[in-house]
Length: 488
Image (tube, rainbow, N blue to C red; front, side, top):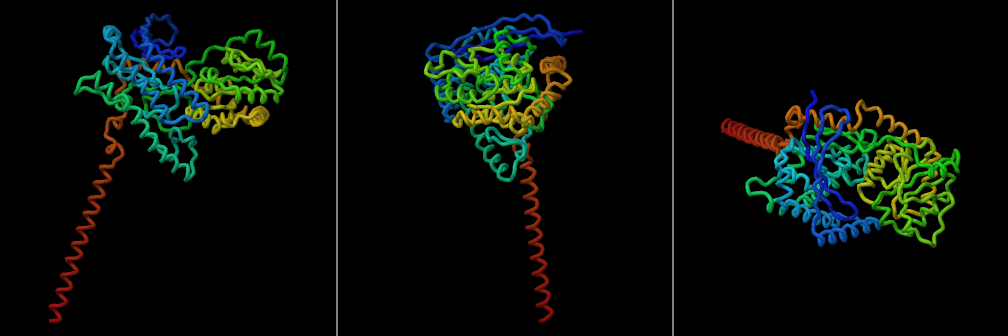
């Protein structure tokens, strides 16, 4: 018999550049069939001063990333602003009390904002988490052998030579320090909003998730050890394909069998795009025999630049539907994970132009799997970009690899949505996921890595060697004494 569960979806959103907090109460059936759901939304906006301050930091961060100057320090500044927002939310007794009164069975959080974990802890309910990026950006406590699991942002693959493994080890220490520094931003918030004696440790909260849903897929990720409570749901956002609007069909038809190239560099990129990059990309597209459908904010287009004859720019386009079109030849993308998953879904090869380090890390996987190439933003010159695009279009091995990835993506026995709902239903029916959690996540790090055992064995070995040395010394002295007696 199908059960009914009440969930809290804690989502922290950025509509435009204003911050909004949303919580949805969902009724989820244990059946995998689609059902109508009832929900209510609790919206909250921080103060106007904070929104302005956050926008200033966010604009600065994205601009610096465009110029290739993304650094951990700038990320920390951004996270500090998110910490201020989190403290403001936890102070809102009306919101927190209303959430406590709902008596949820389970909380569903997105791991982009650590505040979600503190909200779940404050409500005292079990929670599952979805990781919107791949594994490397967050330490979930997964086994991560450094010999073949690349650390973010090493830009390495799972095939590492000696120097690669050395770089990976050093990157691991830097990544661990950065993680601790980011998480320490929330220490004062925890002290302010949790009573002494029951204050959580943020790194421990990450490991208390009943389930981790990861927005990736075996078709993209390098093979690595997983824990039973870790589930791939890459492609969760995929929607059924619809016919493209006639306006696009008319444009595509002009280029016949040559087909078309789709260019979409993400919403943030379209806002912060520079005129120099636009000119170089426009010139590069003019070298192609294919048509180019380009998601580009027309209000940012310089009147001094003449649009290439084979290019159509649009403020919005149906990306998923165009990727499914039979005449698409190439996808030029910023390397966002959802865009990559859509391209894999439809077997479309890619040229990536990453802006953020996370996107560069995603595209390392695309290159390693050989269904695309990437080019750095600062290397964007018309001739270079045109050569990259022609290489991927004309070399059929890229298309073959993309189709192979699509087969992997489609051949799962369950869809991402079915996996997500099925696993949530499983842990609700079994009253938690204790049976899926390894005890090692609760062990101190020195026990987990057997350092206490190695230390014990070292002491025993050294003690044994010392004792043997002493005994041999005593025997040697006794023999020497016996010889002297004989001579005497």
